[in-house]
View (cartoon, rainbow, N blue to C red):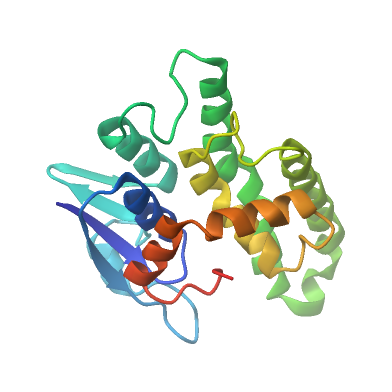
Length: 209
């Protein structure tokens, strides 16, 4: 059985969600953030040298990094192109692009907004540049979702799962009020039964609306 090392209120929610979408049996080992520092507990360093989550154990395979875990689970367990387009299609190349874009580009300005915001007045000089990058990336996603239900070929895929955290964090900052496509996409995927089941399995998730 697949074991998921899951940190509360984190990106590892995506892995629980994917496992629910795939209908796989899995075990969750939960770790709680420090209520004051919001940092992961030291026990996670026993799982991985970086002390990060998610990490999965599947037989002899121990895998970290959300994108790598998602790619592994879809390749190994999805059937009939479930959660990804046909590998020889142009839609598949879009799928791979979104899968890497989520953490490779889109998440950085949101992380900067979180961390620089903790600096108070001393971080103010950086805010215009951060907000500019946020507008750039969220605008790109907003336009990409125009007239579409999901990111790739009108089919829900693991790319939507991987990018979901970006949409949810942006929503928590109140950045989707002028971005109706993005807002509707977040509401759409959060209504999926597998998403809700993942919240039940992983515990309280503050980004679930």
